[in-house]
Image (tube, rainbow, N blue to C red; front, side, top):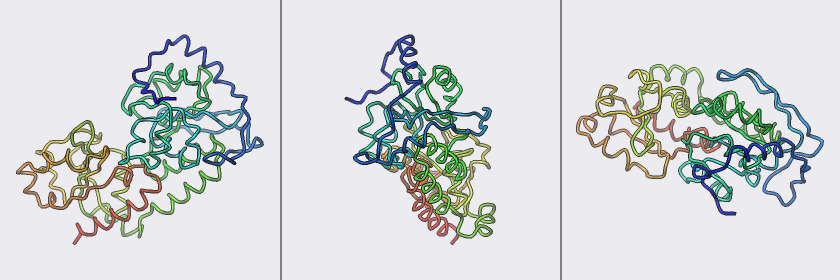
Length: 338
């Protein structure tokens, strides 16, 4: 089945909602893991009811699943990567395009086999998702999609796991992994993954690194999004990584709390001790070059202290790749302190 880009898929809403009635009840029994790309929960594990905690503007809820999901739509890239790590990539029917990019995804071969993709920034259409007849939709509260289509999915009868938080911290990442493990029946695999991340993404010395996060090197974090450099700000996972490494972001000093474009004048005002370049699309440092070559920026001592990393090394979707990423980041921060 050829991959379809769903932004261009025209589906009548009425027909899609009729399909949702079928999606609401999936009678296919769970199968044994033999011959599959990952483990599958036994029938004894289902039906099950999952307690979903309250989250961003959403009340606590329950999600009841009659059987282990065989057709999964993951609407954010972290959720898609978690499903793949749990060994269930062959059950994905919809993922964001970003997870097929080597700079971000860790399961490129598997994700390229998923029949449908969506642009990361598109405004999702609930009927389009429903028309794929998934027996589980997973999404996080990013870009407001949970409010625009989450309710529609739930009312249509499609089981939807609306994660309570975005993937912005180690705690939120491990909590989301636990919920996805429960929903897919891969409880043991999810526990192992969450434990590995919790152990691997710790400050080497909690007291020392906590103090360093307050007085350590001041770092500007840039990503190459939308064809231009963006400053990373607010509650973003790379900034948690920076804090764990013993440094602090200059975004707050500039009064910037939302990731977005940045000017040379703002960089000069911040005068960071170093600049972390996060490659989100595989273009390396090309998109950053013009901004960093600005004479006023280039004259800053911190502009001579840059490090380029791939997105998966410092973004939550990298999962276990972030453990090595933290080690690299910590080593770079130590050079800034010297």
